[in-house]
Image 1 (cartoon, rainbow, N blue to C red):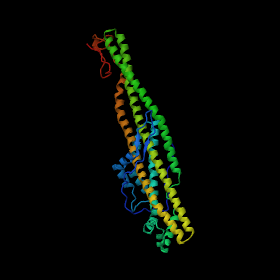
Image 2 (tube, helix red, strand yellow):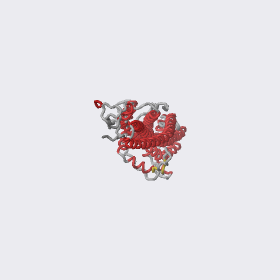
Image 3 (tube, helix red, strand yellow):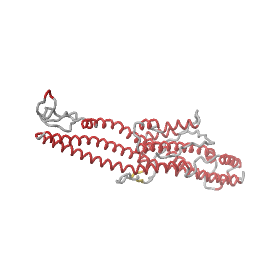
Image 4 (tube, helix red, strand yellow):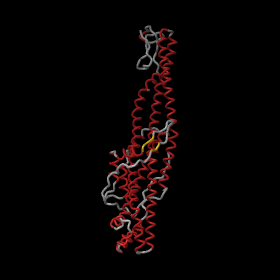
Length: 435
């Protein structure tokens, strides 16, 4: 089992949330973002994925709109931060931990089970991490809301420098007070290459490496077991044909042929059972590998956006400190205000992009978890049928029925050439001629 440090939510000094209405879901991107090729998990190359098309299809799904409506901040909450965080996690993460634990409780503990458990744990921690980042987005909006409200009413929307003279001293005093409040608050976003991100990305990288090594081995075993199944089927046909031909021969020869056919037919269902298990293992590994690849790429994108937002906040703090050093002097305050106005649009776009990718990450996690859990439940429901179909040949091999050609025995008991035939329910692959 891969080891990851648990994610802990940082207590923020400013947890106020903007009371504005929830924005509508983002529209599809107007320009192409290029193509991306997934890492090949087998010898065959993976198909090329159009990111723009995938993004457009994803944001149009009902699940995306449902998650988007759930993650929007509310104006008031009657519970503390931890309770609200757990409630939001229960609303966003599907299938939840209870469903996963209930499905894995009926599986044997092996390497595959450990890999599957590791994926479910890492995907849940990724959801927790994204919830923390979503909280950072809300804190950033609250941090910048007073400044942006001031910038919207100041006469700074023209390239002419004469508009700077329209700023009164009262405007500068108001901006100075907001600068002081802005400087006292911490950066809402974690530092670049933070501990949580490094641990999460390292865990997914290790998990992907293990899945890459395990998946080709499982596919090779499937091909080998299918070849063994075909060989057993040929052996069964030959044994049945030999039994029919030898029905007119000596009884000893017939007994030898029957024993050979029994062994072949007994091994055929067992081989099919092993093949079925390996096919199920391959499906589970493939689902986990695809989910790991997509989720790891999504975390990389989120990580880059967080780094850019963290640097943007630090740069604005640096500008504001420069303005605060000169006191309430008008000229430096005006220059800082003009620079903040230039940075406003780009900062808001970065916030929206991060919020969209967080919502995409939630949707990606849920789809991957649902697919993997579906493969596990499908294997559990079908393995019962396979076990039932493989009980009778093993029982037939342990308790062989008497065999003879013809001739009535005393009180119907089979001795030598007694009138007794093989029961079809015991071994239906062998149909001996009867008289």
